[in-house]
Image 1 (cartoon, rainbow, N blue to C red):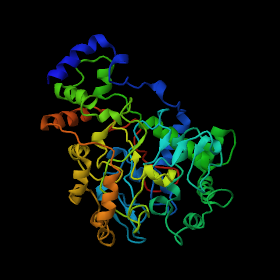
Image 2 (cartoon, helix red, strand yellow; image 1 turned 90 degrees about the vertical axis):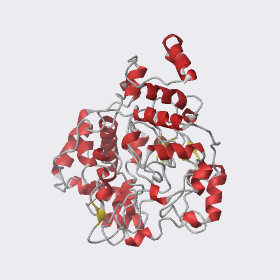
Image 3 (cartoon, one colour; image 1 turned 180 degrees about the vertical axis):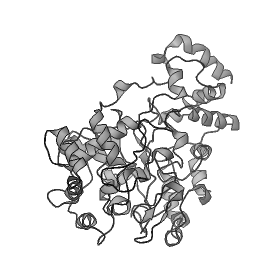
Image 4 (cartoon, rainbow, N blue to C red; image 1 turned 30 degrees about the horizontal axis):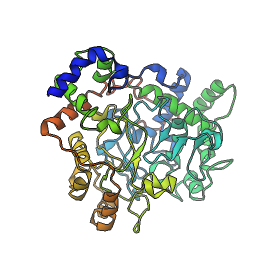
Length: 436
């Protein structure tokens, strides 16, 4: 407590430029958005028409009421119905597997500094790549896109387990299975073709573009405009404190802030205005679920190394932003922990936490055909040792009071307006399909 009080005493005179704390972000830190593109993006975000079977929207796994995620460790995509923990297996086309990674939150992704997308960074701004954005193999951008976020939005539509569906279920899924993604008759074109047949969408895009037919790039541009506007979040108690409101945070939150940016070393990775260095780190999270077809048995997930091919990147995953973190549980690239306190404790001694992990920490929907395989990897001692060997974090000793203070500070990163959103969920969408 003494060090905490000493630092607070210095804050009025030292100035934020010399302090360990970031500056609060401002609207100037974000890509500009056009109201008409935002409106179009809002409709598309909630419209299941983007899915091969017309049954899943972007919002299904990124719903405003669930902190722009879905409150599950690993989502159920194609073959399920409902939202979050209420999502159940549909009457037909049951899920073939869980989505291998946790649905990431969307807060502040419209900020200019977010140039790397997905847990493994497989979409990122790169001047040497086509149209300046690196994309996965056989998914090159057909046209320039305004941001990495816009490019990223196009990929879930191609995932059989997420939105596309599986071969034999619809033409889009069939095209994806044949790796026919771009060009006339490719999966992206088939999605755009469905939208062209809906007069409201066709008219909006024609008006916005001066008469162009809908192209998949228009979908990405609209979705990113909506996400960038709707989920911009800059009014947390921490922001208000940084802007000079000395009473915006409680004493315990201030103590946690001092620890976070000091001896607890949280800000080594969770730095900057959005509490992320946008880098990739191996912190020993226990692996479960179907994995990414890595390792000897396929249930491993090699993280960033899947993109770079570099063994030094094994088990590294992108540092998430901590904005509105109280709303976005479970935590970790696979949602390994359902509580903030649990994920904080994991960081204190990752290897010990990995080897003693209790699967009850995860939030997984009960699906008989999937549950039996969920935790196979944790019984694979060699794979667990490989994960442990990659850990970058040294153990750190904190008191119970320190842990409580850090958790309290993390609550100060929640914008009270985030729970309601700005525009909210539309009552209907142009396709006429059901809005969750």
